[in-house]
Each structure stands twice: as C-alpha cells, then as structure tokens.
Image 1 (spheres, protein in one colour):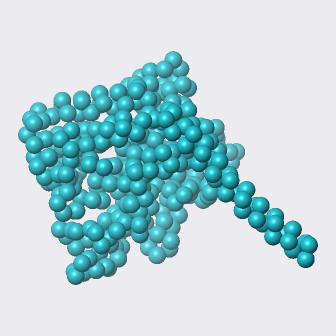
Image 2: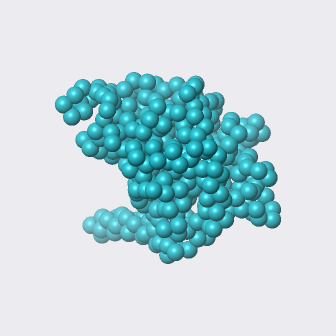
Image 3: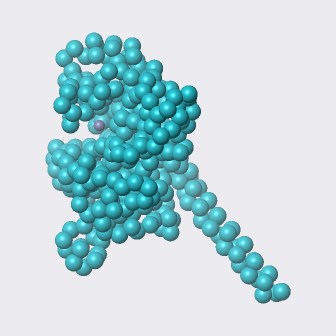
Length: 350
Ligand SMILES: [Zn+2]
C-alpha cells in the first residue's frame, strides 16, 4: 500500500513537473513580452521533435497512407532526400552535405536552423497568436470552418500539412508553393456536391543566403552588421520568423482565392497572375501582392512590437520599391481596393 501511494505520488509529481516546465517556458516568453524577439531565450521541448529519417518528402506519407503525393516532382524546392523532422504538426526538412551523410552527423548550422525554426514557430504561437491563428491554425484542416466558406465553385481549399524546408534550389532567401491535393475528397458544400482539396504548403529558406555573406540578398542587406555571423544569427533570431510569416501569407492567398466577396476574388490573385511561374504572369500584380503582404506584416509588427527597426525598415523599403515599379499604380490600387476588403494602405483587415 505504501509502495502504491509512493508510485501515485511519483506519477503526480511527474505531472506537476511537466506542467511546470511548460509553464516556465511560457513565462520565459511572456516575461519578454515587450522585449525584442531576438533577445528571447527559452528551452524547446525536444521530446516534441520527431526525427523522421533521411528520405524524400513524398515517402513520409503526409496523408497518412490514404493517398500518395508527388510533391517533389511538382515543387522543385523539395526534390530529393532530406533529413526530416516533425514538430507540433509542422514538417522541417534539411539538406545534409555529403560529408554529413558519410559520418551520419548533422552539422552545427543545421542544428541551429532546426532550433531557430522551432523557436520561430513557438514565438509566433505564443507572442503573435492572432497571426499564428490566421496563417497556421485556421488554415489547417479540420480546424478550418468549412461551413463558413462560401464559394463561387464547388471546391474548398485547405492545408493538410505545412512544410518548411532548407535548400538552395531557388535564388531567393525565401520562396513557397502550394502542392495541390491530387485526390480530393467528395463533400457537401451547403446543398451542393463538391470536393475538399487538402493541399500542402511548402516554404523554402535558402541556407546559404541567410549566412550573411551575400551583399545583396538575405541577412546582410537587412542588418548590415559587422560580421557574417552576426547577420546570420540576427536573421535566425527574428528574420526567419518574418520570412516564414511572409511566405505563409502567400499560401493563405493561394488557398483562399475562390472565396466569394473577398480580396481573393479579385481577378489578379484569383487566377494566379501574380505568380511568376504562371504563363499569364503579370509583374505589376506580383509587385502589388508583395506590397500588400509586406504592408500587412509592417502594420502587424509595428502594432505588436518585437521586431527590430532594421528589419521593418528593410521590408518597408522593399514594399516602396515594389509599389514604385508599378507604372499605373493608382489605377491598380483603385481596382484592388474596390474588389477587396483591404485597408486603404493595402494591409489586410486582420
Ligand atoms: Zn513574397
């Protein structure tokens, strides 16, 4: 009997301990609520990181064996094999060097990137909860409320999974794409028959451009600090969070582009003309979408605080350049505002 109660007690204290660890970590973040995000120091619960092995994204069975994917064929950024991890439902992919594969080691840079990606997700969730809800929580099926989606067409787009990969395929610091579900499920939308597309959002971060050695792209032009390492670390500590949020707004627009009566119904974004990979690509619409995204994040982060002036000013300049590159800007803006629910400054009403 005594033994049993000791056992119960130890179980109980184990529960208390794990709760207090979670609480401590939450407090460690909230303690910094008005402090720069780059100064946050907190532990990550490593037991929540699942190592899924060195394999292709398609072999991870992201749909749980119910349907196969050909993501690597459709989105070149995730072609080939990766070290794959899962944290809190988000997949994180890293490309090992040949030397790493021979020694079966992960290199220090990859450990840093894994840690800081998870840290960025945790900060999004805990400090920028409204942004996290819009870009991650609410777009992931089944949390998205299908009943509230009114559509022009007989389909509904949601995200089944979100993938963040580190690779050097593109020439940009960050890029993203949507993998369209190739076997949508039959559902009822209102009183009509339709299809549910459980897509996969893929965000890619360029592990070389964030190192702070390129004078024109990545971490250096944002921070312009003395050494590449300083720029790299500052990017990991706050630039990464901004880059992931930026790319996820592109994906948000992508899956909402059939939603009636909203910005997404505006012809520019509705038929993908802002996408450089489409044949009907319109550079002006691309610039407009970029400006809209950066303005939304500018308003959000200036209101909520936490990101450096260097980062905010850099993206404000990018946004200004995007707008200045549009020859008949006022006409484009007027059309966009007429059809959208945007604020006059082009930011989302979030
Ligand atoms: Zn963009």
